[in-house]
Length: 509
Image (cartoon, rainbow, N blue to C red; front, side, top):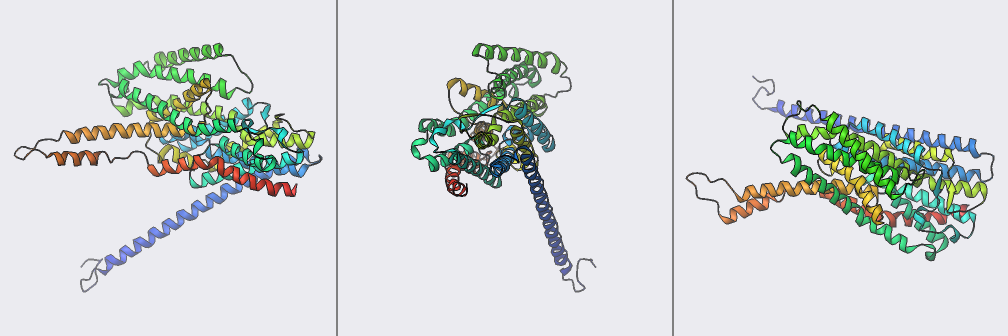
């Protein structure tokens, strides 16, 4: 008699075992949920420790000055904003590398944290704009206290919006967030006439320009790699011919990108110098890969996966360089308004440009790295894994498009967002892959095999097969729609919050 059956033959033992299995699954799920909650609480605890450390350090720096309370509050909000930048924006630099398995999550977090902090501290600059993108003139504010209230409201609104976007899993532009905050606070403090609306128009244009350009450039490079390497019969020989060229292009593009964006606060060479830097970097990158890295390819098998692994090292370098440039460029989003508040309180002046104290810059640099380590994995997984499936080749094309698109846009005078470019690049390679796969299946449907002894398929049958083949979706639409919606409401949402916060902050100050 079966041990799973009752004496009268009723298999009640099976039902009991099934119930026990379900209970065990519930216990395991509850245990995992409890662990996740505990880890989130632990992360929040570490974040709170950082904020308290910022408060203590601020006290040491300015505890004896008038207006210490305002500086302390501004420093805490700046630290909070920096952590949110790390949690959300940095994912665009390393997400594709993680999704393609070129980097582990921990490896990506370490590389990004180190290079983000290095970029902020080395090339973050000692002078920053107090009003992001010049959308509101400092002279528009009636007095110093109104200016300080506006900056506090703008910074807090931007931080709150980026935090909310991270919670719902939407990668958004922190630059647009602070722009929206300054816009809303500026209107509330000085009226609609204080805003430079033509500049706001160019910023709004970047909502469309950035992702479209990023997607087109990334898809273009992926199509080239497929035609020149992947679709060739001898993939290894094709890789030996073209990978050095692609890596050379990456080296040249990133060299120019780093000088234009990553080092712009410490060095601004003329256009001929930029061309020379790009060409020199291209030749060096080409030589290194052509004559050193690919000298021995006997271990490389003649298939797509094996050839794709040759892109792994360049992809890791690209993620590190993107992080460096991002840290140097976007640290001002966290500490620009903070530096303006510190200057306004301590020196009693309101200016469009202010000196950036080292301790203020350190808050931004360290905060970005801490936010990335504690809260960054969520957005990294979405960008690298959830939108579409990435491999080293596709991720390399996304990283390359990020640098090249910024260079093209800067040359044309077009405003772009690095966040929108990177995510647009992910969508671009995903939609190109979807098109190629559907076209392949569609062609197979139009040429069905003829089975001996059976009539050939009818026209309706062929059309049905084609329709089914076209239904394959390799880009998750819900992420596409959700991210676009978040992009569209970033500036209005942060502006509304900043306007309301200004009324509250100004009443207290």
